[in-house]
Length: 183
Image (cartoon, rainbow, N blue to C red; front, side, top):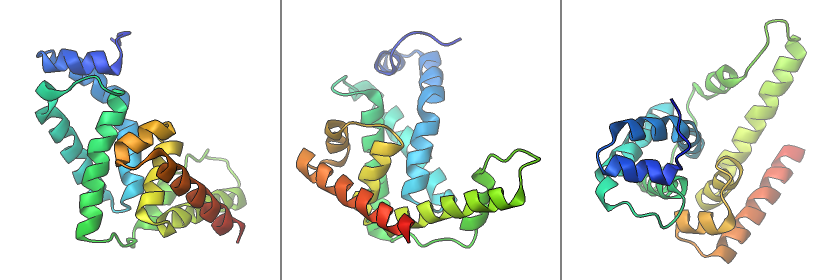
């Protein structure tokens, strides 16, 4: 049932009352949005809440939505603001279920060798720990670039930081992650 309308056109159609446009828009961007939030706050329950809050705010703002940037940039900005608010209230702590969650994310064929499965798990776990060790601003910039594939300008729009600041955050994030993974 997909259309060839852009995300922005779908949001404008939804603002005019087209509920099916919202359904299509939600189906298109929900995975990207949820991954960004989940990697920004490691507690699944908090990520679920922030995911719902992001959509609630987008729905509430539909009549004020204007195409000034990509829809995904606008939506990620809402999510980013909610994540920042959450982090200001309480710095997230790694949960006891974190390893099980990462293990559950692995897409493992039934016949895969146990050594390989363990190696992939350890690699993903090391990356997750490296991400968690980053300062919040660097982690968010890294996730927006790598997960959401935003440009420097788009990351600057989402975070409210200047382009040079975004470049610096990304440079430090990549260096710290490389260093951590090399250990």
